[in-house]
Amino acid sequence: MTKMRKLAVFICMLSFLYGCAPAVLMGVGAGVGIGTYKYIEGNLAREYPLKYARAWNATNRALENLQISISSSMDEKGRGKIEAVRRDGKKVAITLKDKGMGVTLISVRVGLLGDRLEAEKIHNEMISVSGLK
Image 1 (cartoon, rainbow, N blue to C red):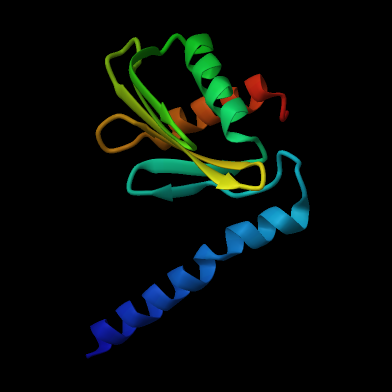
Image 2 (cartoon, helix red, strand yellow):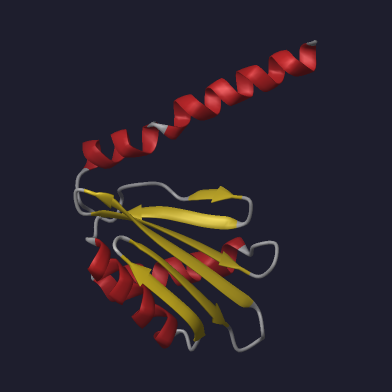
């Protein structure tokens, strides 16, 4: 019974905290400090104050700058997915989603289980390329 109670409390906390990112996003403004990184199941996701098209272009340029080869790319109406391979053979998966109001969610996964440090490098390059830094 206590396991069920803990699980219920945990789910309630997650649903409560899930709504905090948009609130933080609106409260802070359109600077680089908006949004937070979320690391879930090997994916490192962040909301950017960029329209989708600009985020898509910045992502592709960041991969080019980091010498990560794109193996497939799908871009359709506010949703995109890029699959790429790094020089060391690790696969990179990036998804983009237009959240509206000039905000795009970008999620990066490096490797099979996810490599947070390498995903952060890609996010940092996207920030640099997009001019947010």
